[in-house]
Image (cartoon, rainbow, N blue to C red; front, side, top):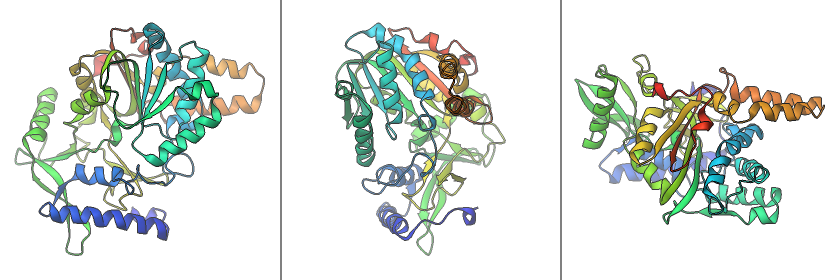
Length: 394
């Protein structure tokens, strides 16, 4: 499959080789192996070298993949429509926290729409680990927003630890959390690790899992009411509850909204999906070699939305709803936005927006592969999920 991939240029390969050398040194210093999750963390987030930390183009036609906000303004406008009632319930002190701001496309549209809806937050905070992406976001938003609105935007180095009220939003973030991989052998749980072969190339191996990963696997088996089969291999995020509590920080009142591709637990761990969901993205090519070219490709795994529901409720929030992206957008103003555009009589604009809506909602595109899940604390957010709520499937 790798023969079908575009070849990185010399500068990109040199950059990847620098990161690979750092990872090799860490493997050697760790006794010859590191967990796959650690490899994924370094490949994506190593300062100055990782995929999300370096300066290569990631989003859009010139990058490796296209996210919903990059397709056009409809996605962000509908999300703004969904969370505006929550921000208005909270009032003047409401804040909006976006985890991972991408190119800034979402923030640009969301802020403009929230202003139109009289739901402008007192602060729009972006938690973005990449210095390069921060700068791109800042330049874009400074160009696109009025000075008064732009002054509400702030970039954070970490979660909001002081008490705050508002909305937390994360689109395609959970899929990029460094994930452990497990395998079942003779009824025991093993963890996938990365070692070096005789020529210094990365390769996978396994070692007995630690207590945290083993307990998490057994929890899933109890939930599914059957053990995993011999040789079954997949991903699992035992750290997800801790991550969620960390990013929520000091929120006392508000709503959480996560959008990502994935499944409920029963679908995630289907018997036939016996090698998990891990994949890599390079220049719009999807492949299975996550160890290839560290720093140059995105590495992701699908989201277990049942695990996300457990993490949110475990953090003291009520589950507001769970549905497909298509139903979420249709339930939060997508049709009305299209009607407004079509009423202008501009055929080219109508065609553009209708094509965008199809990509966001058709089952063969993003409509059912992507799911939305929301949580609430002392606010009413359930109405955002009234169209096609699938909570019963979690």
